[in-house]
Image (cartoon, rainbow, N blue to C red):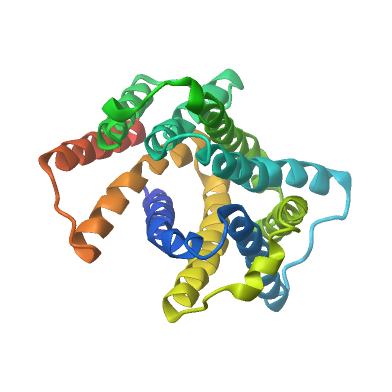
Length: 293
């Protein structure tokens, strides 16, 4: 691999680390406010932050035409507003185990979309890599606890639609992000997503005035906006410009490994033999998928 490819891999790993840390931050935040309201707020605030940085750097804005705004509106809904909204609503109608397992379908769905669209070829190494990583995540997520029941069917369906939305975003976004400035596209995605979610949160805004703004909450919120939203989506869009969509997607499987490491080093959680085996399968899958056939 060239140094440039190693740097892309580093960025893809960093994205998953930032997302992995956000699980802990989000737990702190959603104890004080509704998840869908928080998603709306963090997109809008991340948009403001991204706009300030973009203006300071004096990045030239792409042409104000349909070629720029029509795709960005669709990508904003798929990658942020609709995907996040469906997941959060679905989470309320299913179990956390079900949702965690279903959301691991994102890389598989992405691979399916890019192969059907003939964006990428399904090589033997890539197939083996995805299978190994997928089973590693399933085992780590306690797939035995997955339950198909009538009372979770709606929630499971909504979470699956959320996973499909993000897979479509990764696939269709690649060509668009290669064409337009990454800072402006990310800025507009945040604002469009925040505004799209706003009508569903108008009755919840008054709850913001009763928040308990503890130091822990403020730190968690700051990280979630800057580290896990502004930086991660910017880096994800940057990576989509330079790496195959399937490669960007398979690195999502690193998230449970990151969460396990965070639990071990910062939360005092034990590292089990099962976790080690699952992590080995996931890392082996990543290595296989990066190898040339």
